[in-house]
Image (cartoon, rainbow, N blue to C red; front, side, top):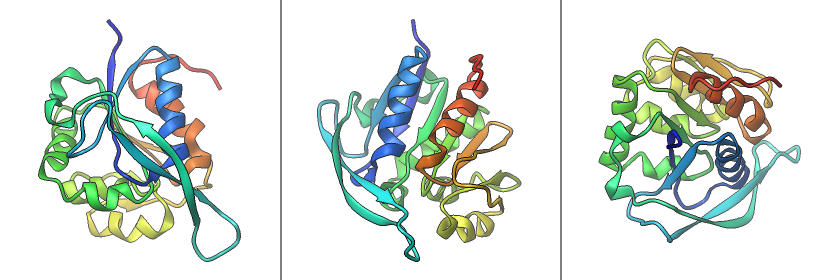
Length: 192
């Protein structure tokens, strides 16, 4: 039986930060269960494409519909080897769900691998799990990491930061780095 990964998403999750890790981890042989609060397997979340065009912040365009393949209400963290939290606008509001916070806390309590990209660390800050960790994120989330007791690390947009069981990346150009480092934390042997 394939190792299972839980992926937390929500409407207007960033397209590349959702689809690329979902597909890449699946190619590596992991069963990736994508869930969203208040939704079930077969429902979809809308995605958004964020791009960097020289403005003060990213631009946003409509992305694809992403089909969920598992029920949020049925999540039992004991069934999963790791947690992947996507970015985009979804983390801003899924962090308001009490069960989302419990899920994140359970993964950290069990010292299981956790990945969060772009705005995904907003969920980690709300869960109160970043104290003493080094993490990166989209720069606008840096102050949240600091206020949550973590150390914000600024890295190139295509890099990832690993600290213990946690791997973070600032945006979708870091998909390769975050997926590779997350897979290593899961015990996969990857050479890039």
